[in-house]
Length: 316
Image (tube, rainbow, N blue to C red; front, side):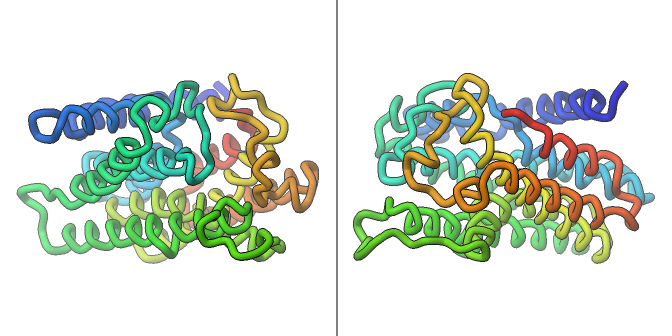
């Protein structure tokens, strides 16, 4: 079995665990109105790679492999689910007419197309807040040390989802692509290399980093191990977004599950628009190598390194 085929089996098993848990964790009537529950379920169950929650579980598993504490999967799984809810909320809002105005996501119509703008916005709000409800729930036997780890992990996720992370990155994207029509007072902002990197690290990289870091923290990783995974995931997130930029140029909608060519059509700043496709591939490869290097002396390599290989070789 090749490393990537082995990873495919691991992805499938983790995805099944996450999907099963999400079915029990998502709110439903009569606990909340059926309309909002339906809209939330629609976006979460639309499919997707589940890359971020798998990364949370893989980071926890990597810590477990070097620890005598035993499996932390039961502790990490709620965080994995919460990460997926936050990611899905960001997609629902990103697709809105006021943002990217996209009509296709994960191979089917976007939430605002099915439910209207208002309910789509509310479903995203619901997913975001439900994520923190899930992460905050504690076990009956959680001691002070475990509670401390939980709070650190929640803090990492909150920072990634907020103005310093995803929200800030989206704001930069809106301004740079001229989509912020209400506040735009002049020409679009031209991003240089440093500003483009900053946008990608906030908009995409922050949640990917938080996915891995929260898994490492909740599993009881040492400061050194958590820091290594933080550096790994920061570079992994950059590689992931650069590959996404390239796929928007070269991919087709049926393969991507979303509209292809939207970035160029909207004038969005991307690595291919600044560097060209081939140079962008080199940037992705360099980020992937930095991710691998971060793990090299930690004993955390195998599964996490396979994920790097998958990120740079993916075609969707």
